[in-house]
Image (cartoon, rainbow over all chains, first blue to last red; front, side, top):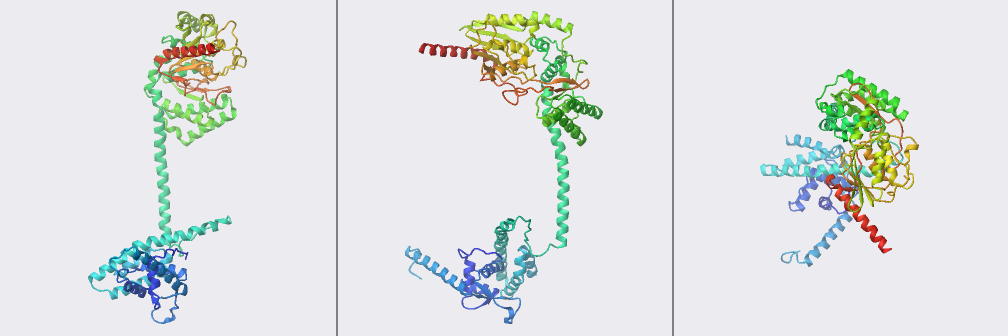
Length: 113
Length: 487
Protein backbone atom coordinates (compact mmCIF):
# COMPACT_ATOMS: atom_id res chain seq x y z
CA UNK A 1 0.00 0.00 0.00
CA UNK A 2 1.14 3.49 -0.74
CA UNK A 3 2.46 6.04 1.64
CA UNK A 4 -0.23 8.32 2.97
CA UNK A 5 0.21 11.70 4.43
CA UNK A 6 0.47 11.75 8.21
CA UNK A 7 1.60 15.34 8.37
CA UNK A 8 -0.40 16.89 9.91
CA UNK A 9 -1.38 13.85 11.90
CA UNK A 10 -5.12 13.23 11.53
CA UNK A 11 -6.96 13.18 14.82
CA UNK A 12 -8.19 9.59 14.24
CA UNK A 13 -4.60 8.39 13.79
CA UNK A 14 -3.49 10.26 16.91
CA UNK A 15 -6.34 8.76 18.90
CA UNK A 16 -5.35 5.27 17.75
CA UNK A 17 -1.71 5.83 18.71
CA UNK A 18 -2.83 7.03 22.14
CA UNK A 19 -5.18 4.10 22.61
CA UNK A 20 -2.30 1.69 22.04
CA UNK A 21 0.02 3.51 24.44
CA UNK A 22 -0.73 1.37 27.47
CA UNK A 23 -1.54 -2.00 25.90
CA UNK A 24 -1.92 -3.92 22.60
CA UNK A 25 -5.46 -4.02 21.25
CA UNK A 26 -7.50 -5.39 18.36
CA UNK A 27 -9.74 -3.22 16.19
CA UNK A 28 -12.78 -3.30 18.37
CA UNK A 29 -10.62 -2.74 21.41
CA UNK A 30 -9.10 0.35 19.80
CA UNK A 31 -12.55 1.65 18.98
CA UNK A 32 -13.78 1.19 22.52
CA UNK A 33 -10.63 2.73 24.02
CA UNK A 34 -10.85 5.77 21.73
CA UNK A 35 -14.47 6.23 22.66
CA UNK A 36 -13.58 6.02 26.31
CA UNK A 37 -10.51 8.31 26.23
CA UNK A 38 -12.41 10.96 24.26
CA UNK A 39 -15.28 10.91 26.70
CA UNK A 40 -17.59 9.34 24.09
CA UNK A 41 -17.05 12.09 21.54
CA UNK A 42 -15.08 10.01 19.03
CA UNK A 43 -16.44 6.68 17.88
CA UNK A 44 -14.37 5.33 15.01
CA UNK A 45 -16.38 3.47 12.36
CA UNK A 46 -14.79 0.46 10.72
CA UNK A 47 -13.88 2.32 7.52
CA UNK A 48 -12.14 5.18 9.29
CA UNK A 49 -10.56 2.87 11.82
CA UNK A 50 -9.05 0.42 9.37
CA UNK A 51 -7.91 2.95 6.84
CA UNK A 52 -6.08 4.75 9.66
CA UNK A 53 -4.68 1.46 10.89
CA UNK A 54 -3.44 0.71 7.38
CA UNK A 55 -1.72 4.07 7.15
CA UNK A 56 -0.09 3.66 10.54
CA UNK A 57 1.08 0.15 9.57
CA UNK A 58 2.58 1.51 6.34
CA UNK A 59 4.49 4.10 8.29
CA UNK A 60 5.59 1.47 10.80
CA UNK A 61 4.08 3.51 13.62
CA UNK A 62 2.16 0.45 14.77
CA UNK A 63 2.70 -3.22 14.02
CA UNK A 64 0.51 -6.27 13.76
CA UNK A 65 1.12 -9.09 16.19
CA UNK A 66 1.21 -12.72 15.08
CA UNK A 67 -2.26 -14.23 15.27
CA UNK A 68 -0.73 -17.07 17.33
CA UNK A 69 -1.74 -15.09 20.39
CA UNK A 70 -4.49 -17.59 20.75
CA UNK A 71 -7.93 -16.18 21.00
CA UNK A 72 -9.78 -15.27 17.81
CA UNK A 73 -7.84 -15.61 14.54
CA UNK A 74 -10.22 -13.11 12.88
CA UNK A 75 -9.14 -10.46 15.31
CA UNK A 76 -5.76 -8.99 14.64
CA UNK A 77 -3.93 -7.29 17.42
CA UNK A 78 -1.90 -4.11 17.01
CA UNK A 79 0.99 -2.73 19.01
CA UNK A 80 2.59 0.70 19.16
CA UNK A 81 6.16 0.81 17.79
CA UNK A 82 8.99 2.97 19.15
CA UNK A 83 8.64 5.47 16.30
CA UNK A 84 4.86 5.53 16.83
CA UNK A 85 5.45 6.43 20.43
CA UNK A 86 7.89 9.16 19.42
CA UNK A 87 5.41 10.60 16.94
CA UNK A 88 2.60 10.53 19.51
CA UNK A 89 4.85 12.31 21.99
CA UNK A 90 5.89 15.05 19.52
CA UNK A 91 2.25 15.51 18.51
CA UNK A 92 1.27 15.84 22.16
CA UNK A 93 4.02 18.39 22.68
CA UNK A 94 2.89 20.35 19.66
CA UNK A 95 -0.64 20.40 21.07
CA UNK A 96 0.70 21.39 24.47
CA UNK A 97 2.50 24.32 22.84
CA UNK A 98 -0.73 25.37 21.20
CA UNK A 99 -2.46 25.02 24.52
CA UNK A 100 0.08 27.33 26.21
CA UNK A 101 -0.45 29.94 23.54
CA UNK A 102 -4.21 29.62 23.84
CA UNK A 103 -3.95 30.07 27.55
CA UNK A 104 -1.72 33.13 27.17
CA UNK A 105 -4.32 34.63 24.86
CA UNK A 106 -6.91 34.02 27.59
CA UNK A 107 -9.15 31.93 25.42
CA UNK A 108 -10.36 29.86 28.34
CA UNK A 109 -13.07 30.89 30.66
CA UNK A 110 -11.73 30.89 34.19
CA UNK A 111 -8.35 29.46 34.98
CA UNK A 112 -8.21 25.79 34.35
CA UNK A 113 -5.78 23.21 32.95
CA UNK B 1 -29.80 -9.04 9.07
CA UNK B 2 -27.83 -5.86 9.86
CA UNK B 3 -24.67 -7.81 9.33
CA UNK B 4 -25.72 -8.86 5.85
CA UNK B 5 -26.54 -5.30 4.89
CA UNK B 6 -23.19 -4.13 6.13
CA UNK B 7 -21.44 -6.94 4.26
CA UNK B 8 -23.07 -5.64 1.08
CA UNK B 9 -22.10 -2.05 1.89
CA UNK B 10 -18.52 -3.19 2.35
CA UNK B 11 -18.42 -3.86 -1.39
CA UNK B 12 -18.26 -0.09 -1.87
CA UNK B 13 -14.65 -0.15 -0.70
CA UNK B 14 -11.80 -0.95 -3.09
CA UNK B 15 -11.16 -4.68 -3.34
CA UNK B 16 -7.75 -4.39 -1.74
CA UNK B 17 -9.17 -2.77 1.35
CA UNK B 18 -12.12 -5.16 1.49
CA UNK B 19 -9.91 -8.18 1.24
CA UNK B 20 -7.56 -7.00 3.94
CA UNK B 21 -10.03 -5.58 6.46
CA UNK B 22 -13.51 -6.72 5.43
CA UNK B 23 -13.61 -9.59 7.89
CA UNK B 24 -12.29 -7.44 10.70
CA UNK B 25 -14.81 -4.71 9.98
CA UNK B 26 -17.61 -7.24 10.12
CA UNK B 27 -16.22 -8.60 13.35
CA UNK B 28 -16.17 -5.09 14.78
CA UNK B 29 -19.80 -4.65 13.82
CA UNK B 30 -20.69 -7.96 15.45
CA UNK B 31 -18.93 -6.88 18.62
CA UNK B 32 -20.77 -3.62 18.68
CA UNK B 33 -24.11 -5.30 17.98
CA UNK B 34 -23.46 -7.59 20.87
CA UNK B 35 -22.50 -4.78 23.24
CA UNK B 36 -24.94 -2.11 22.19
CA UNK B 37 -28.51 -3.31 22.61
CA UNK B 38 -31.65 -1.24 22.78
CA UNK B 39 -33.12 1.11 20.21
CA UNK B 40 -31.20 4.36 20.96
CA UNK B 41 -27.87 2.49 20.99
CA UNK B 42 -28.67 0.65 17.78
CA UNK B 43 -29.75 3.87 16.07
CA UNK B 44 -26.53 5.54 17.13
CA UNK B 45 -24.59 2.54 15.89
CA UNK B 46 -26.14 2.74 12.43
CA UNK B 47 -25.70 6.49 12.19
CA UNK B 48 -22.04 5.90 13.02
CA UNK B 49 -21.78 3.29 10.29
CA UNK B 50 -23.41 5.45 7.62
CA UNK B 51 -21.31 8.51 8.52
CA UNK B 52 -18.23 6.33 8.49
CA UNK B 53 -19.05 4.96 5.06
CA UNK B 54 -19.71 8.42 3.66
CA UNK B 55 -16.32 9.64 4.85
CA UNK B 56 -14.07 6.68 4.32
CA UNK B 57 -15.28 5.18 1.02
CA UNK B 58 -14.32 8.22 -1.08
CA UNK B 59 -11.07 8.53 0.86
CA UNK B 60 -10.07 4.96 0.13
CA UNK B 61 -10.72 5.38 -3.59
CA UNK B 62 -8.83 8.65 -3.65
CA UNK B 63 -5.91 7.07 -1.88
CA UNK B 64 -5.86 4.28 -4.42
CA UNK B 65 -5.75 6.68 -7.33
CA UNK B 66 -3.10 8.96 -5.90
CA UNK B 67 -1.03 5.89 -5.16
CA UNK B 68 -1.09 4.99 -8.83
CA UNK B 69 -0.29 8.45 -10.14
CA UNK B 70 3.38 8.61 -9.11
CA UNK B 71 3.95 5.06 -10.28
CA UNK B 72 2.85 5.86 -13.82
CA UNK B 73 5.85 7.89 -15.06
CA UNK B 74 8.22 5.24 -13.85
CA UNK B 75 6.33 2.64 -15.80
CA UNK B 76 6.30 4.68 -18.97
CA UNK B 77 9.93 5.73 -18.73
CA UNK B 78 11.35 2.74 -20.52
CA UNK B 79 8.93 3.21 -23.40
CA UNK B 80 7.24 -0.13 -22.89
CA UNK B 81 3.48 -0.30 -22.92
CA UNK B 82 2.22 -1.14 -19.48
CA UNK B 83 -0.98 -1.96 -17.71
CA UNK B 84 -1.80 -0.70 -14.29
CA UNK B 85 -3.72 -3.05 -12.07
CA UNK B 86 -6.36 -1.29 -10.00
CA UNK B 87 -7.83 -4.39 -8.47
CA UNK B 88 -5.92 -7.39 -7.42
CA UNK B 89 -8.76 -9.78 -8.18
CA UNK B 90 -9.33 -10.74 -11.82
CA UNK B 91 -12.71 -9.52 -13.11
CA UNK B 92 -15.47 -12.09 -12.72
CA UNK B 93 -17.17 -13.60 -15.79
CA UNK B 94 -20.40 -11.78 -14.98
CA UNK B 95 -18.56 -8.46 -14.92
CA UNK B 96 -16.93 -9.21 -18.25
CA UNK B 97 -20.26 -10.10 -19.80
CA UNK B 98 -21.96 -6.94 -18.58
CA UNK B 99 -19.04 -4.84 -19.81
CA UNK B 100 -19.15 -6.54 -23.21
CA UNK B 101 -22.88 -5.98 -23.58
CA UNK B 102 -22.54 -2.32 -22.57
CA UNK B 103 -19.75 -1.73 -25.08
CA UNK B 104 -21.73 -3.36 -27.87
CA UNK B 105 -24.80 -1.28 -27.01
CA UNK B 106 -22.65 1.87 -26.96
CA UNK B 107 -21.18 1.12 -30.38
CA UNK B 108 -24.58 0.43 -31.90
CA UNK B 109 -25.99 3.64 -30.41
CA UNK B 110 -23.03 5.60 -31.79
CA UNK B 111 -23.51 4.38 -35.34
CA UNK B 112 -27.26 4.88 -35.25
CA UNK B 113 -26.78 8.45 -34.03
CA UNK B 114 -24.13 9.19 -36.64
CA UNK B 115 -26.46 8.00 -39.38
CA UNK B 116 -29.42 10.04 -38.19
CA UNK B 117 -27.50 13.19 -37.27
CA UNK B 118 -25.28 12.97 -40.35
CA UNK B 119 -28.19 12.78 -42.76
CA UNK B 120 -29.94 15.63 -41.00
CA UNK B 121 -26.79 17.76 -41.04
CA UNK B 122 -26.24 17.28 -44.77
CA UNK B 123 -29.80 18.15 -45.69
CA UNK B 124 -29.82 21.15 -43.36
CA UNK B 125 -26.56 22.45 -44.80
CA UNK B 126 -27.99 22.11 -48.27
CA UNK B 127 -31.15 23.94 -47.26
CA UNK B 128 -29.16 26.75 -45.70
CA UNK B 129 -27.25 27.28 -48.90
CA UNK B 130 -30.36 27.13 -51.00
CA UNK B 131 -32.04 30.46 -50.12
CA UNK B 132 -29.56 32.72 -51.97
CA UNK B 133 -30.43 30.83 -55.13
CA UNK B 134 -34.14 31.22 -54.65
CA UNK B 135 -34.62 34.54 -52.87
CA UNK B 136 -32.17 36.43 -55.06
CA UNK B 137 -32.53 34.85 -58.48
CA UNK B 138 -31.00 37.81 -60.27
CA UNK B 139 -27.44 37.07 -59.22
CA UNK B 140 -27.14 33.44 -60.29
CA UNK B 141 -28.82 34.31 -63.53
CA UNK B 142 -26.34 37.10 -64.11
CA UNK B 143 -23.52 34.75 -63.28
CA UNK B 144 -24.78 32.21 -65.72
CA UNK B 145 -25.16 34.83 -68.37
CA UNK B 146 -21.68 36.20 -67.96
CA UNK B 147 -20.06 32.86 -67.55
CA UNK B 148 -21.78 31.62 -70.65
CA UNK B 149 -20.17 34.34 -72.68
CA UNK B 150 -16.79 33.12 -71.44
CA UNK B 151 -14.53 35.91 -72.59
CA UNK B 152 -16.56 38.60 -70.88
CA UNK B 153 -19.13 39.50 -73.45
CA UNK B 154 -20.03 43.12 -72.77
CA UNK B 155 -23.42 42.84 -74.41
CA UNK B 156 -25.16 41.32 -71.41
CA UNK B 157 -23.70 43.81 -68.98
CA UNK B 158 -24.49 46.63 -71.32
CA UNK B 159 -28.09 45.60 -71.85
CA UNK B 160 -28.52 45.14 -68.15
CA UNK B 161 -26.96 48.53 -67.53
CA UNK B 162 -29.16 50.12 -70.13
CA UNK B 163 -32.11 48.81 -68.19
CA UNK B 164 -33.46 46.73 -71.07
CA UNK B 165 -34.70 43.20 -70.68
CA UNK B 166 -32.26 42.13 -73.38
CA UNK B 167 -31.27 38.99 -71.52
CA UNK B 168 -34.08 36.48 -71.63
CA UNK B 169 -32.49 34.36 -68.92
CA UNK B 170 -32.31 37.22 -66.46
CA UNK B 171 -35.94 38.01 -67.15
CA UNK B 172 -37.25 34.52 -66.66
CA UNK B 173 -34.97 33.45 -63.84
CA UNK B 174 -37.81 33.87 -61.38
CA UNK B 175 -38.95 30.47 -62.47
CA UNK B 176 -36.04 28.91 -60.60
CA UNK B 177 -38.04 29.63 -57.45
CA UNK B 178 -40.32 26.74 -58.32
CA UNK B 179 -38.45 23.70 -57.12
CA UNK B 180 -38.20 20.98 -59.68
CA UNK B 181 -37.64 17.54 -58.24
CA UNK B 182 -34.55 15.75 -59.43
CA UNK B 183 -34.62 12.10 -60.43
CA UNK B 184 -31.64 9.87 -59.62
CA UNK B 185 -30.80 9.22 -63.29
CA UNK B 186 -30.50 12.93 -64.02
CA UNK B 187 -28.42 13.35 -60.88
CA UNK B 188 -26.06 10.60 -61.96
CA UNK B 189 -25.73 12.10 -65.44
CA UNK B 190 -24.85 15.53 -64.01
CA UNK B 191 -22.35 14.11 -61.54
CA UNK B 192 -20.62 12.09 -64.25
CA UNK B 193 -20.51 15.08 -66.61
CA UNK B 194 -19.06 17.30 -63.88
CA UNK B 195 -16.35 14.72 -63.18
CA UNK B 196 -15.55 14.36 -66.90
CA UNK B 197 -15.35 18.11 -67.51
CA UNK B 198 -13.17 18.61 -64.44
CA UNK B 199 -10.60 16.01 -65.41
CA UNK B 200 -10.62 17.21 -69.00
CA UNK B 201 -10.60 20.99 -68.75
CA UNK B 202 -9.29 22.14 -65.37
CA UNK B 203 -5.92 23.83 -65.86
CA UNK B 204 -4.27 21.68 -63.21
CA UNK B 205 -4.78 18.20 -64.65
CA UNK B 206 -3.80 16.36 -61.49
CA UNK B 207 -6.07 18.41 -59.24
CA UNK B 208 -8.89 18.20 -61.75
CA UNK B 209 -8.71 14.44 -61.72
CA UNK B 210 -8.56 14.40 -57.92
CA UNK B 211 -11.66 16.56 -57.74
CA UNK B 212 -13.42 14.30 -60.25
CA UNK B 213 -12.53 11.35 -58.03
CA UNK B 214 -13.97 13.12 -55.00
CA UNK B 215 -17.23 13.87 -56.80
CA UNK B 216 -17.63 10.26 -57.93
CA UNK B 217 -16.72 8.87 -54.52
CA UNK B 218 -19.22 11.16 -52.79
CA UNK B 219 -21.90 9.92 -55.16
CA UNK B 220 -21.05 6.28 -54.35
CA UNK B 221 -21.23 7.12 -50.64
CA UNK B 222 -24.70 8.54 -51.20
CA UNK B 223 -23.82 12.10 -50.12
CA UNK B 224 -25.72 13.47 -53.11
CA UNK B 225 -28.96 11.83 -52.13
CA UNK B 226 -29.79 14.84 -49.94
CA UNK B 227 -29.89 16.99 -53.09
CA UNK B 228 -33.50 16.66 -54.10
CA UNK B 229 -33.57 19.66 -56.41
CA UNK B 230 -31.34 20.98 -59.15
CA UNK B 231 -30.12 24.01 -57.25
CA UNK B 232 -29.36 21.88 -54.20
CA UNK B 233 -27.32 19.51 -56.33
CA UNK B 234 -25.45 22.42 -57.93
CA UNK B 235 -24.68 23.85 -54.50
CA UNK B 236 -23.57 20.47 -53.20
CA UNK B 237 -21.33 19.72 -56.18
CA UNK B 238 -19.85 23.22 -56.09
CA UNK B 239 -18.97 22.66 -52.45
CA UNK B 240 -17.37 19.32 -53.22
CA UNK B 241 -15.19 20.50 -56.09
CA UNK B 242 -14.20 23.70 -54.33
CA UNK B 243 -13.27 21.67 -51.27
CA UNK B 244 -11.16 19.33 -53.38
CA UNK B 245 -9.35 22.05 -55.31
CA UNK B 246 -9.58 25.05 -52.99
CA UNK B 247 -10.50 27.04 -56.10
CA UNK B 248 -13.39 29.49 -55.69
CA UNK B 249 -13.66 29.95 -59.44
CA UNK B 250 -15.09 26.49 -59.92
CA UNK B 251 -18.85 26.53 -59.93
CA UNK B 252 -21.66 24.20 -60.89
CA UNK B 253 -24.67 26.20 -62.02
CA UNK B 254 -28.31 25.24 -62.21
CA UNK B 255 -30.79 27.15 -64.27
CA UNK B 256 -34.47 26.27 -64.20
CA UNK B 257 -35.09 27.74 -67.68
CA UNK B 258 -33.26 25.81 -70.37
CA UNK B 259 -29.73 27.03 -71.12
CA UNK B 260 -29.05 28.04 -74.73
CA UNK B 261 -27.77 25.26 -76.96
CA UNK B 262 -24.70 27.02 -78.31
CA UNK B 263 -22.99 29.32 -75.84
CA UNK B 264 -20.82 31.03 -78.44
CA UNK B 265 -18.00 33.23 -77.21
CA UNK B 266 -18.22 35.69 -80.08
CA UNK B 267 -21.28 37.72 -80.93
CA UNK B 268 -23.17 36.73 -84.00
CA UNK B 269 -23.32 39.39 -86.76
CA UNK B 270 -26.90 40.00 -85.77
CA UNK B 271 -25.97 40.35 -82.12
CA UNK B 272 -23.10 42.66 -82.99
CA UNK B 273 -25.43 44.91 -84.95
CA UNK B 274 -27.82 45.07 -82.04
CA UNK B 275 -24.92 45.79 -79.71
CA UNK B 276 -23.71 48.65 -81.90
CA UNK B 277 -27.20 50.10 -82.02
CA UNK B 278 -27.55 49.87 -78.26
CA UNK B 279 -24.16 51.48 -77.66
CA UNK B 280 -25.05 54.29 -80.05
CA UNK B 281 -28.34 54.78 -78.26
CA UNK B 282 -26.79 54.85 -74.78
CA UNK B 283 -23.66 56.73 -75.82
CA UNK B 284 -21.53 53.71 -74.92
CA UNK B 285 -23.17 53.60 -71.46
CA UNK B 286 -21.42 56.84 -70.54
CA UNK B 287 -24.25 58.28 -68.50
CA UNK B 288 -22.56 61.53 -67.61
CA UNK B 289 -19.29 63.35 -68.14
CA UNK B 290 -18.82 66.58 -66.25
CA UNK B 291 -16.36 68.88 -64.56
CA UNK B 292 -17.68 69.39 -61.07
CA UNK B 293 -16.98 72.41 -58.83
CA UNK B 294 -13.37 72.50 -57.70
CA UNK B 295 -12.24 71.27 -61.15
CA UNK B 296 -13.08 67.66 -60.39
CA UNK B 297 -13.59 65.41 -63.43
CA UNK B 298 -16.58 63.10 -63.18
CA UNK B 299 -17.46 60.14 -65.39
CA UNK B 300 -20.47 57.95 -64.70
CA UNK B 301 -19.84 54.80 -66.69
CA UNK B 302 -22.42 52.01 -66.60
CA UNK B 303 -20.38 49.32 -68.35
CA UNK B 304 -16.99 48.76 -69.90
CA UNK B 305 -18.00 48.49 -73.56
CA UNK B 306 -16.00 46.77 -76.29
CA UNK B 307 -13.17 48.94 -77.56
CA UNK B 308 -13.95 47.84 -81.12
CA UNK B 309 -17.28 49.64 -80.84
CA UNK B 310 -16.76 52.38 -78.27
CA UNK B 311 -13.08 53.33 -78.20
CA UNK B 312 -13.59 56.79 -79.81
CA UNK B 313 -16.39 57.73 -77.44
CA UNK B 314 -14.46 56.65 -74.37
CA UNK B 315 -11.30 58.44 -75.48
CA UNK B 316 -13.31 61.55 -76.11
CA UNK B 317 -14.80 61.37 -72.63
CA UNK B 318 -11.38 60.86 -71.03
CA UNK B 319 -10.00 63.77 -73.08
CA UNK B 320 -12.75 66.07 -71.88
CA UNK B 321 -11.63 65.73 -68.26
CA UNK B 322 -7.91 65.78 -69.00
CA UNK B 323 -7.43 69.20 -67.44
CA UNK B 324 -9.06 68.45 -64.12
CA UNK B 325 -7.36 68.30 -60.74
CA UNK B 326 -8.98 65.00 -59.68
CA UNK B 327 -11.08 62.27 -61.29
CA UNK B 328 -14.15 60.49 -59.98
CA UNK B 329 -15.21 57.29 -61.75
CA UNK B 330 -18.79 56.54 -60.82
CA UNK B 331 -19.20 52.75 -61.17
CA UNK B 332 -22.17 52.38 -58.83
CA UNK B 333 -24.32 51.05 -61.66
CA UNK B 334 -21.56 49.39 -63.67
CA UNK B 335 -22.15 45.67 -64.14
CA UNK B 336 -18.87 45.03 -65.94
CA UNK B 337 -17.91 44.42 -69.51
CA UNK B 338 -14.79 43.98 -71.58
CA UNK B 339 -11.51 43.71 -69.63
CA UNK B 340 -9.75 45.37 -72.57
CA UNK B 341 -11.78 48.52 -71.92
CA UNK B 342 -10.83 48.56 -68.23
CA UNK B 343 -7.19 48.47 -69.33
CA UNK B 344 -7.76 51.17 -71.93
CA UNK B 345 -9.17 53.59 -69.35
CA UNK B 346 -6.69 52.70 -66.62
CA UNK B 347 -3.79 53.40 -68.99
CA UNK B 348 -4.62 57.13 -68.72
CA UNK B 349 -3.74 57.06 -65.04
CA UNK B 350 -0.15 55.81 -65.17
CA UNK B 351 3.04 57.36 -66.51
CA UNK B 352 4.49 53.96 -67.46
CA UNK B 353 3.13 50.45 -68.12
CA UNK B 354 2.01 48.52 -65.06
CA UNK B 355 0.76 44.95 -64.74
CA UNK B 356 -3.03 44.89 -65.08
CA UNK B 357 -4.40 41.84 -63.31
CA UNK B 358 -7.32 40.13 -65.02
CA UNK B 359 -8.59 36.96 -63.35
CA UNK B 360 -10.01 35.75 -66.63
CA UNK B 361 -6.51 35.45 -67.97
CA UNK B 362 -5.57 37.77 -70.78
CA UNK B 363 -2.55 37.08 -72.93
CA UNK B 364 0.81 38.36 -71.82
CA UNK B 365 0.84 41.44 -74.03
CA UNK B 366 -2.62 42.52 -72.84
CA UNK B 367 -1.60 42.12 -69.23
CA UNK B 368 0.29 45.41 -69.33
CA UNK B 369 -1.34 48.79 -69.59
CA UNK B 370 -0.44 50.76 -72.70
CA UNK B 371 0.68 53.70 -70.56
CA UNK B 372 1.56 56.40 -71.07
CA UNK B 373 -1.37 57.61 -73.14
CA UNK B 374 -0.02 60.49 -75.17
CA UNK B 375 -1.36 63.78 -73.92
CA UNK B 376 -2.82 62.38 -70.69
CA UNK B 377 -2.38 64.75 -67.81
CA UNK B 378 -4.14 62.51 -65.34
CA UNK B 379 -1.15 60.37 -64.37
CA UNK B 380 -0.58 62.21 -61.10
CA UNK B 381 -4.14 63.29 -60.26
CA UNK B 382 -6.05 61.75 -57.36
CA UNK B 383 -8.60 59.14 -58.48
CA UNK B 384 -11.82 58.21 -56.69
CA UNK B 385 -14.06 55.29 -57.59
CA UNK B 386 -17.66 55.16 -56.41
CA UNK B 387 -18.82 51.59 -55.73
CA UNK B 388 -22.00 49.83 -54.71
CA UNK B 389 -23.15 46.28 -54.29
CA UNK B 390 -24.21 46.45 -57.95
CA UNK B 391 -20.64 47.16 -59.05
CA UNK B 392 -19.78 43.86 -60.72
CA UNK B 393 -17.29 41.91 -62.75
CA UNK B 394 -15.19 44.18 -65.01
CA UNK B 395 -16.07 47.17 -62.85
CA UNK B 396 -14.74 45.21 -59.89
CA UNK B 397 -11.58 44.42 -61.81
CA UNK B 398 -11.10 48.15 -62.48
CA UNK B 399 -11.69 48.98 -58.80
CA UNK B 400 -9.65 46.09 -57.43
CA UNK B 401 -6.60 46.65 -59.60
CA UNK B 402 -6.49 50.41 -59.04
CA UNK B 403 -6.92 49.85 -55.30
CA UNK B 404 -4.13 47.28 -55.23
CA UNK B 405 -1.90 49.59 -57.26
CA UNK B 406 -2.67 52.37 -54.71
CA UNK B 407 -3.88 54.52 -57.57
CA UNK B 408 -7.47 55.10 -56.45
CA UNK B 409 -9.55 55.64 -53.35
CA UNK B 410 -12.70 53.50 -53.32
CA UNK B 411 -15.76 55.21 -51.84
CA UNK B 412 -19.05 53.43 -51.23
CA UNK B 413 -20.07 49.85 -50.56
CA UNK B 414 -18.34 46.49 -50.88
CA UNK B 415 -18.85 45.39 -54.47
CA UNK B 416 -20.94 42.39 -55.56
CA UNK B 417 -18.13 39.86 -55.86
CA UNK B 418 -18.35 38.48 -59.39
CA UNK B 419 -15.05 37.50 -60.93
CA UNK B 420 -16.33 34.42 -62.79
CA UNK B 421 -13.02 33.48 -64.17
CA UNK B 422 -14.26 30.18 -65.47
CA UNK B 423 -15.18 29.06 -68.94
CA UNK B 424 -18.73 27.78 -68.99
CA UNK B 425 -19.39 24.24 -70.06
CA UNK B 426 -22.91 23.21 -70.78
CA UNK B 427 -23.85 19.84 -69.27
CA UNK B 428 -27.50 19.68 -70.30
CA UNK B 429 -30.50 21.97 -70.56
CA UNK B 430 -30.28 22.99 -66.92
CA UNK B 431 -26.78 22.31 -65.65
CA UNK B 432 -23.43 23.81 -66.49
CA UNK B 433 -20.00 24.05 -64.89
CA UNK B 434 -17.60 26.98 -64.83
CA UNK B 435 -13.99 25.82 -65.02
CA UNK B 436 -10.85 27.98 -65.02
CA UNK B 437 -8.83 26.66 -67.93
CA UNK B 438 -5.76 28.80 -67.49
CA UNK B 439 -3.81 29.55 -64.38
CA UNK B 440 -3.74 33.27 -63.65
CA UNK B 441 -1.55 34.39 -60.81
CA UNK B 442 -3.03 37.14 -58.70
CA UNK B 443 -0.03 39.29 -57.76
CA UNK B 444 -1.80 40.75 -54.74
CA UNK B 445 -3.28 37.87 -52.80
CA UNK B 446 -4.44 34.31 -53.16
CA UNK B 447 -8.08 35.20 -53.71
CA UNK B 448 -9.50 38.00 -55.78
CA UNK B 449 -12.95 39.48 -55.31
CA UNK B 450 -14.95 36.39 -56.27
CA UNK B 451 -17.89 36.13 -53.88
CA UNK B 452 -16.31 38.44 -51.29
CA UNK B 453 -16.34 41.63 -53.39
CA UNK B 454 -13.90 44.54 -53.32
CA UNK B 455 -13.93 46.45 -50.06
CA UNK B 456 -14.02 50.26 -50.26
CA UNK B 457 -11.38 52.47 -48.64
CA UNK B 458 -14.12 54.79 -47.40
CA UNK B 459 -17.33 52.97 -46.53
CA UNK B 460 -20.46 55.07 -47.08
CA UNK B 461 -23.95 54.50 -48.44
CA UNK B 462 -23.93 54.63 -52.26
CA UNK B 463 -26.18 57.69 -52.17
CA UNK B 464 -23.53 59.55 -50.18
CA UNK B 465 -20.58 58.29 -52.22
CA UNK B 466 -20.36 61.19 -54.65
CA UNK B 467 -20.56 63.91 -51.99
CA UNK B 468 -17.96 62.08 -49.94
CA UNK B 469 -15.58 61.70 -52.88
CA UNK B 470 -15.97 65.40 -53.74
CA UNK B 471 -15.14 66.31 -50.16
CA UNK B 472 -12.09 64.02 -50.23
CA UNK B 473 -10.92 65.58 -53.52
CA UNK B 474 -11.37 69.06 -52.08
CA UNK B 475 -9.43 68.10 -48.94
CA UNK B 476 -6.64 66.59 -51.03
CA UNK B 477 -6.41 69.78 -53.11
CA UNK B 478 -6.31 72.00 -50.01
CA UNK B 479 -3.59 69.75 -48.58
CA UNK B 480 -1.55 70.06 -51.82
CA UNK B 481 -2.02 73.85 -51.79
CA UNK B 482 -0.83 74.17 -48.24
CA UNK B 483 2.15 71.98 -49.02
CA UNK B 484 3.15 74.06 -52.05
CA UNK B 485 2.55 77.32 -50.17
CA UNK B 486 4.89 76.19 -47.43
CA UNK B 487 7.51 75.39 -50.02
